[in-house]
Amino acid sequence: MHDRRQFLGTALGAGVGLLAARVSRAAEARIEVFPGEPIGTIAPEIYGHFVEHLGGVVYDGIWVGEGSRIPNVGGVRKDVVDHLRRVRASVVRWPGGCFADQYDWRDGTGPRARRPRRTNFWVDVREWPAGAGDGPQRYEPNQFGTVEFVRFCRLAGAQPYVAANVRSLSAQDFWRWVEYCNAPAGTTTTADQREADGEREPLAVRFWGVGNESWGCGGNFTPEEYAAAFRRYTAWLPWGGKLSLIGAGPNSGELDWTRRFFAAAEGRGRQHLWGWALHHYSWNASGGRTSDWRAGKSDALQFDPEQHYEILAEADRMESLVADHWKAMGETDTGHRVKLVVDEWGAWHKPGTEPFREALLGQQNTMRDALVAGLTLDTFQRHADKVGMANVAQLVNCLQSLFLAHEDRFCLTPTYHVFDLYAAHQGAQAVRAVFAAPRVSYTRNGQPASLYGLNGSASLKDRRVTLTVTNPGLDAPRETEVAVRGATVHSVRAATLAAPDVHAHNTFDDPGAVAPREQAVAASGASFVHRFPPASVTRLEMELG
Ligand code: AHR
Picture 1: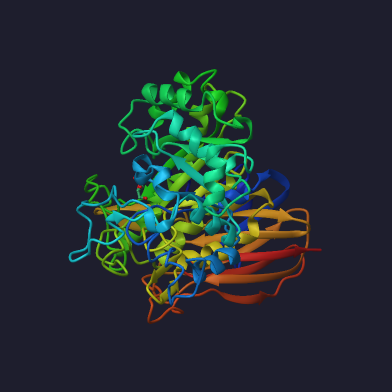
Picture 2: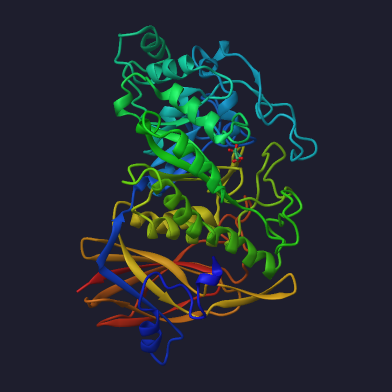
């Protein structure tokens, strides 16, 4: 996609030449926000999360048990829900991931002491750290079932999004799970079962995933086979009209999966589809040297400038992925009734920085990851008319986490701080913004390469513009003139996440190494100049006059 961008950087629409000409002498870059050019309302669900029974996500990360000495609310780690409230977490996807197509929801019901133990999907993958035990991360004890999950969501202030098992359970199991969650009190055997599990009233689960990665761990389906399964699993569900059903969409750029599913599900199948779920991980830092899933990754902490820019370039692919899949969906869904959902995204680095041995796929989180988060959320917001939901993978102790948690130790990652900074966008009107900045140059496998210079997104709520900006460059700050078309800026507050070294990260022993800094910015009139530090994520909140 980068060849679409010219020397002056990201031009999100027309007028970049004009903008460049008007950059003030003091500034090398310019951002102009157009409050009169709305894109769409930013769905709060773009700020969604993902919780899978994988390594240390559920057991230890979230579920510590009611009898634990770790501060908890009904068995759920208190630090996690308190901080999720702070970032206004909107939705949580569960129980997987690949685990979802192995999970029998009945195992997670009934008295906890009598629930069965099962082999977890992830029991024997190569990525397990040496010496990891045979605990709940490998042998699922089912202490955290549907009721525990929905209570966790309530505590966090988020909506539940449940992924059903299409690979190894039947359509009948699916509708019975919906019934267990949503049947009115006292009406069915499953409603009685729910009441016995402590929840008399319906759990009101609206979002349901129909499988997960059905092209892979979810059953190795062809698009046509999956379309047939989707049709059958969704032809009738209790109170189906009130549910938002999400189809298992493509892996990154696999447009064929989108096109062929949409064509095969034409008519009766597609009428039940609310969202189409793309997955995209930023993992290949090799600069084109390999496409091997393991060899292509970089270390979460020890990465060089090329690996820094390559991971950001991987994340920046989200721009074209959203546009291309949206276009492919529109070839048959011509009215664009179906929303794009990105229910797994984030950086995926090499094993080796797990916060503890049982935290399979756990990894440290630096300013590089904060940039991945900022630039991805900005991309979704620039496409607020298309993206209905997104879920960063995964919430705690796994891949691009907001939290690291083990026993009585807890810390926030730089990615958490980005979610905190960006929460102000939720529910606001996304508006067009144009970024003009020299591209940043680097060496990719011995050849010259470049990435955008500054990028971001803007939204408007009442008379306040929220502008979020990422500066991917490792070496220099960006002196930038910021203007809001047709308005004067009355006052500005900046909050910046940056660190002297891009490798900076938080640990249990040093939890405050990376944290945002707030400052007032001198501004009055048509524009003002702001300096964006190297490798930084910034939020500017502007009150319009
Ligand atoms: O998030 C980890 C795994 O990545 C999920 O289980 C799967 O859906 C994806 O391949």
